[in-house]
Image (tube, rainbow over all chains, first blue to last red; front, side):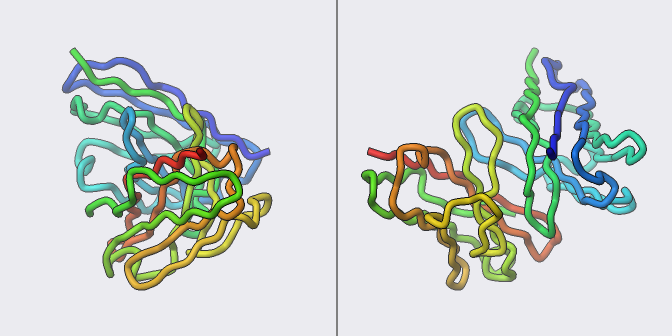
Length: 117
Length: 110
């Protein structure tokens, strides 16, 4: 069974940093692109970032460029999102999702990030 | 990249059909066939319901169908059932090699 489990969310002050993790199991992690998608409370889904299966290419939404870094460790079957210079508007549930040819076919349960003083 | 435009809410009675629209631009919905639809129940993760405009993943009911005309994609749910009540989100790959989602549509089954 394909499983994605996010962790690392929590309460952080504005300007602070947080690193999210997504542990993958049930499939060959190194074969797939991966994404981070977020959802602010009561709002819609917003795409954040994508990384190639081998980690050689990454791309970001404009609103996180220069602040967030997506990475992966294929030996550990784990996806990461390093988030720096956090703002109140970054408050959201962050989901990791597997890419299956330009669609996100499997999602984790999400981890909540709250940016507040 | 601006979000795709979806109606905030739609409703229908059991057994009826409803359609949710998703309007973008020639840089996303109108520029390729990588349009997807996701169902999300409260407090749950999104679930892929339609991909590549009109394809259903294994296990998804054939009551769900998708289509596209120009810059607007549509999700149709026929034979509405109580369990269909959820939020529905559209998504498209873009010409900038990014993805964009719609604002989501709340479906109420009356």
